[in-house]
Amino acid sequence: MAELVINPSGAYTDYFVVSLDGGTYDLPERGAELTLRLRGRVPSRYEPGGMDADFGRGADEEGVIVVERFHAWEDHAGPGGVIQFEGLVRRPEEALHAKGALAFGSLAMPAGILAMLGYEGLSPENRRTLSAMASPPLGTLRMW
Image 1 (tube, one colour):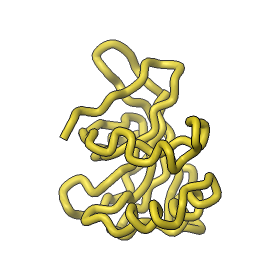
Image 2 (spheres, helix red, strand yellow):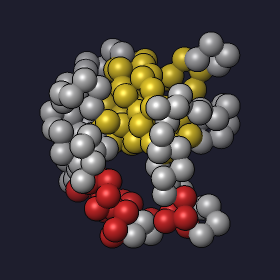
Image 3 (cartoon, one colour):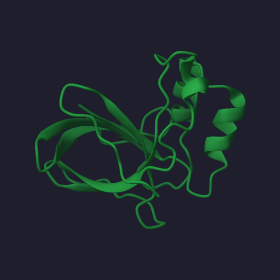
Protein backbone atom coordinates (compact mmCIF):
# COMPACT_ATOMS: atom_id res chain seq x y z
CA MET A 1 0.00 0.00 0.00
CA ALA A 2 1.10 3.55 -0.74
CA GLU A 3 1.06 6.27 1.91
CA LEU A 4 -1.73 8.83 2.04
CA VAL A 5 -1.26 11.87 -0.19
CA ILE A 6 -2.84 14.76 1.70
CA ASN A 7 -3.18 18.13 -0.01
CA PRO A 8 -1.92 21.27 1.74
CA SER A 9 -4.27 23.48 3.72
CA GLY A 10 -6.83 25.16 1.51
CA ALA A 11 -7.30 22.22 -0.88
CA TYR A 12 -9.70 19.37 -0.17
CA THR A 13 -8.52 15.79 0.32
CA ASP A 14 -11.26 13.16 0.60
CA TYR A 15 -10.69 9.56 1.75
CA PHE A 16 -12.81 6.58 2.62
CA VAL A 17 -12.68 5.45 6.27
CA VAL A 18 -12.33 1.68 6.76
CA SER A 19 -12.16 -0.49 9.86
CA LEU A 20 -9.11 0.29 11.99
CA ASP A 21 -8.40 -3.24 13.24
CA GLY A 22 -11.18 -5.39 11.83
CA GLY A 23 -13.63 -4.12 14.45
CA THR A 24 -16.17 -1.33 14.65
CA TYR A 25 -15.52 2.25 15.73
CA ASP A 26 -16.91 3.37 19.07
CA LEU A 27 -18.45 6.84 19.25
CA PRO A 28 -15.95 8.94 21.24
CA GLU A 29 -16.80 11.67 23.69
CA ARG A 30 -16.80 15.28 22.60
CA GLY A 31 -13.26 16.71 22.54
CA ALA A 32 -11.59 13.28 22.47
CA GLU A 33 -9.24 11.93 19.81
CA LEU A 34 -10.45 9.50 17.16
CA THR A 35 -7.98 7.27 15.32
CA LEU A 36 -9.12 6.40 11.79
CA ARG A 37 -7.78 4.16 9.04
CA LEU A 38 -8.15 5.77 5.62
CA ARG A 39 -7.96 3.82 2.38
CA GLY A 40 -8.62 5.00 -1.16
CA ARG A 41 -9.78 8.41 -2.22
CA VAL A 42 -13.42 9.33 -2.63
CA PRO A 43 -13.94 9.95 -6.35
CA SER A 44 -14.74 13.50 -7.42
CA ARG A 45 -17.56 14.53 -9.71
CA TYR A 46 -15.48 17.56 -10.68
CA GLU A 47 -12.81 15.54 -12.48
CA PRO A 48 -12.99 15.44 -16.29
CA GLY A 49 -15.31 12.54 -17.06
CA GLY A 50 -16.94 12.64 -13.62
CA MET A 51 -16.82 10.21 -10.74
CA ASP A 52 -16.50 7.04 -12.80
CA ALA A 53 -13.43 8.41 -14.59
CA ASP A 54 -11.94 9.29 -11.18
CA PHE A 55 -12.95 6.02 -9.46
CA GLY A 56 -9.93 4.09 -8.22
CA ARG A 57 -7.58 7.10 -8.10
CA GLY A 58 -5.51 6.68 -4.97
CA ALA A 59 -7.04 3.24 -4.34
CA ASP A 60 -3.67 1.93 -3.14
CA GLU A 61 -3.23 4.76 -0.60
CA GLU A 62 -3.70 3.78 3.03
CA GLY A 63 -2.77 5.20 6.40
CA VAL A 64 -3.87 6.00 9.93
CA ILE A 65 -4.64 9.52 11.10
CA VAL A 66 -5.86 11.01 14.38
CA VAL A 67 -8.79 13.44 14.45
CA GLU A 68 -8.37 15.69 17.48
CA ARG A 69 -11.15 17.64 19.19
CA PHE A 70 -13.82 15.26 17.94
CA HIS A 71 -17.25 16.87 17.78
CA ALA A 72 -20.28 14.85 16.63
CA TRP A 73 -23.13 16.76 15.05
CA GLU A 74 -25.63 14.39 16.66
CA ASP A 75 -25.69 11.61 19.25
CA HIS A 76 -27.48 8.94 17.20
CA ALA A 77 -27.05 7.75 13.64
CA GLY A 78 -29.49 9.36 11.25
CA PRO A 79 -30.71 8.19 7.86
CA GLY A 80 -28.05 6.05 6.22
CA GLY A 81 -26.61 5.00 9.57
CA VAL A 82 -23.83 7.58 9.82
CA ILE A 83 -22.93 10.32 12.27
CA GLN A 84 -21.38 13.50 10.93
CA PHE A 85 -18.49 14.97 12.87
CA GLU A 86 -15.70 17.50 12.69
CA GLY A 87 -12.28 17.96 14.23
CA LEU A 88 -8.66 18.75 13.53
CA VAL A 89 -5.84 16.72 11.94
CA ARG A 90 -2.33 17.83 12.90
CA ARG A 91 0.56 17.19 10.56
CA PRO A 92 4.20 18.16 11.11
CA GLU A 93 3.90 21.12 8.76
CA GLU A 94 0.32 22.28 9.47
CA ALA A 95 -3.04 21.56 11.05
CA LEU A 96 -6.02 20.73 8.84
CA HIS A 97 -9.75 20.98 9.38
CA ALA A 98 -11.49 17.62 9.20
CA LYS A 99 -15.13 16.82 8.54
CA GLY A 100 -16.50 13.34 8.17
CA ALA A 101 -19.39 10.93 8.29
CA LEU A 102 -18.90 7.51 9.85
CA ALA A 103 -20.94 4.45 10.84
CA PHE A 104 -20.14 3.84 14.50
CA GLY A 105 -20.79 0.32 15.78
CA SER A 106 -21.10 -1.26 12.32
CA LEU A 107 -18.89 -3.04 9.78
CA ALA A 108 -21.35 -2.66 6.90
CA MET A 109 -21.06 0.08 4.30
CA PRO A 110 -23.79 2.60 5.19
CA ALA A 111 -26.60 3.02 2.69
CA GLY A 112 -26.19 6.79 3.05
CA ILE A 113 -22.71 6.66 1.53
CA LEU A 114 -23.94 4.58 -1.40
CA ALA A 115 -26.83 7.00 -1.88
CA MET A 116 -24.49 10.01 -1.82
CA LEU A 117 -22.14 8.39 -4.35
CA GLY A 118 -25.11 7.51 -6.56
CA TYR A 119 -26.44 11.06 -6.37
CA GLU A 120 -23.00 12.40 -7.31
CA GLY A 121 -22.92 10.14 -10.39
CA LEU A 122 -20.94 7.00 -9.49
CA SER A 123 -22.13 4.06 -11.58
CA PRO A 124 -24.01 1.14 -10.00
CA GLU A 125 -21.11 -1.18 -10.94
CA ASN A 126 -18.57 0.92 -9.03
CA ARG A 127 -20.91 1.27 -6.04
CA ARG A 128 -21.24 -2.55 -5.97
CA THR A 129 -17.44 -2.85 -6.15
CA LEU A 130 -17.08 -0.63 -3.07
CA SER A 131 -19.75 -2.43 -1.05
CA ALA A 132 -18.34 -5.89 -1.93
CA MET A 133 -14.81 -5.16 -0.65
CA ALA A 134 -13.47 -7.29 2.20
CA SER A 135 -13.26 -4.09 4.28
CA PRO A 136 -15.87 -1.76 2.78
CA PRO A 137 -15.92 1.98 3.47
CA LEU A 138 -17.63 2.81 6.75
CA GLY A 139 -17.50 6.52 6.13
CA THR A 140 -15.68 9.40 4.51
CA LEU A 141 -13.29 12.05 5.78
CA ARG A 142 -12.54 15.42 4.17
CA MET A 143 -9.48 17.44 5.21
CA TRP A 144 -8.66 21.00 4.11
